Length: 355
Image (tube, rainbow, N blue to C red; front, side):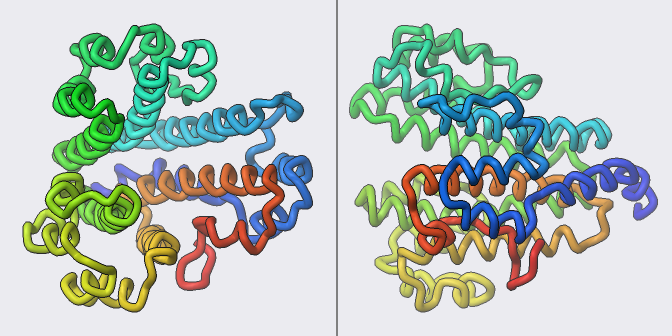
């Protein structure tokens, strides 16, 4: 069993570790944070591993933030492809499925464009280039007249199922929220169903990571649904991912109907969530949860590299790095202070140590 895992990951594990070494360092984050403006920020970013992606970019474009997003997410797609080239078939298939969440993000953009009646030419600049990760022609989807036509057009693809399920509510309420949530819930269920692609050991590692990820998202979503959207507990209950503690009805109900974070902390297991949540205000919830999630990924990366958790953790770190860079750039464009910006970042640290 052990030697089988070593053989399966001998090349892929080394490849992922090499890619991980190209993530931004604490020094990189320091200089990006203290950059005086967005131009100095981008000048420094060009000294990092992102230099090739930024080559030839028009810094003076009025759409530079959108263009930067395209280039950075293009780097994330390229990272998925590089990871996959080092993996064997079943592991490669699973990692590709995880990356399909980017396809869901593009579909959300198509939904917004059709809902708002935006011109296809302007809308397509917001799409990620997914290369071989998707067979969908998103530009063609933008040409469709409305969302019901989109759902019908997607009938040969797996995306029709979640969209058709939420379409009646969209037609009734004329809100995108049910469609977007249906996509998110379906993607996670798809991941869990396809754990069967993996061997027994990898299935256990990947399942644990997905459950912990689900707990983080469910905690964040429940707070957002309650504090921002003012959804009732019954509706929150149905909009939670079927993973982690929420696979158990009692914990799912506790999360959906909790009147406060303190109440939830007393009803969820003390370790890690009770200790993590106790005394926490909604304003600090997101930062604390992402920091804990980073510590989870750090523990996986410290384990022997012959397991699926290594590429999964690296790609999550890469995605958070992309989100950090975009948050920093937007902050520099708005002339925010480094102190204010640093609060919003998902720093790649765990327990004070760099991952």
